[in-house]
Length: 295
Ligand SMILES: C[S@@+](CC[C@H](N)C(=O)[O-])C[C@H]1O[C@@H](n2cnc3c(N)ncnc32)[C@H](O)[C@@H]1O
Image (tube, rainbow, N blue to C red; front, side, top):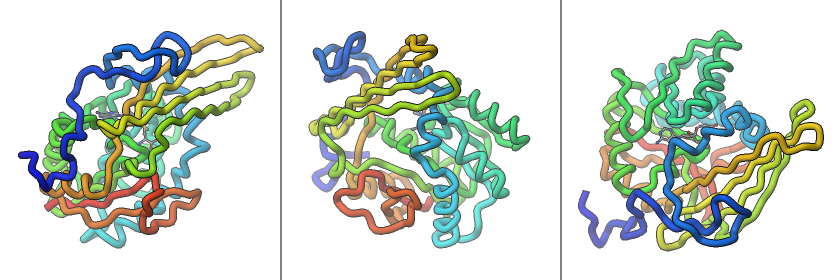
């Protein structure tokens, strides 16, 4: 793809490799800048087993699947039978969709997340194919009626090369007119410097997560430093940190990317709020759902 004047992505996309993180890796948040190499394989490597503890409360997975059904009813030529869940994580959507009679395959680059997904599927005796694969180079040997990528996985595509590799790989895995339903974070709604924390209790253990997000307007990348502490019997028994680098997008950028790569953008929807009733996104909507159709 040639970058042109009309290209809304302009020079916002950063190349892969290292960047200067606005926080110190080994110390407290926001101390001193330091060069950090970002490796996708390291994120989600430590907290596979804590993921559901955190996101089980934050995400309405059943509501998401209701919403997907509505989208398939409205935009698919016929009801999809086979689904690809890209960045499936611990398989929560895949599990619900399987119970709703879709044949689901989930891919993810994090082994611990997939192990948790497989454990949950075994527990529920659900037949789901999970594969340790990178969305940019996936090769599953089959095609699907539709693909989904929810909860911000799309933002881990950090540059134009990644996005093109992914959309190309996806196109080869989708049947003609197959839908791709994915969520992205809206550049205009991102908080530029934000600190947050949460706690979760499970039995005698408490998990604390401190997070600090700093937005880089040069690259439209949200750098999120997360520190985790596990406390048992009043003692910190484990602590670890992860650095997430999430690319944010505007709707014109998304339109440009998908339409340059053999998809048509059908709609964008606001998916925030507990019941995720699809509405038109506003400039303050952070999480936007895009529906694209393979050409
Ligand atoms: C925020 S989690 C979302 C998980 C799941 N979709 C959900 O809604 O609970 C993002 C997931 O994307 C995965 N991921 C990140 N980069 C990826 C890549 N290049 N290919 C496949 N999966 C990736 C991570 O390992 C992680 O499990």
